[in-house]
Length: 251
Image (cartoon, rainbow, N blue to C red; front, side, top):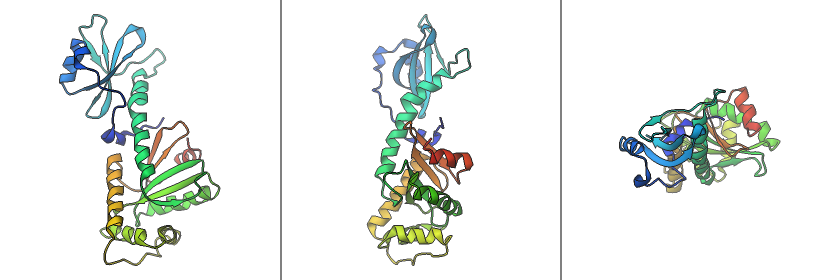
């Protein structure tokens, strides 16, 4: 499973926090050091475990049988499998990714492809991003055969006038057509800049950039999709061959 570490900035716990009074004393002491205790869990070997977060990163704590000591770290089995990682992913990262996908799905954007496509993809793109343009071309055959559909959320991060051109595209009567002309011409058919940006368009671009920052994406294209296992996947930059194959397969 691909980890989406950037989501750590927006993690929220699906479980209620454990009451401090119910915690063993060593776990209470760890809690005082800034670890948020989320829930207890049963670990192999009769060990009592606790799931927590520290600076929005998942952590696991293991109480010794005498209940006088607690160990923070990963537990491995005889085959070298990281058992701690499994519960952190299942209880924190995967639910957080699904919650983030709801926000991405609700965002406005430039839609391309069928609603019946096998994989729905959200892309943060800048009008002057060359790798966004290459991804657009890469995606077209798969959009046409309904393997994927895309929703492009325009941002202005590359040039001082990027946001102006993003606004010109989104202010057009048919933004999808203007975006298609820009990308299919490899950036040559630029929209005419308008004097004033409508407040709704300004708000949309601002919202897109806030979402991108929440996800921790540092550049464009920033590509997201929920795979068949309903785990949020992230690709930053132009996908390589394997990443593109996984995206098309919604893997």
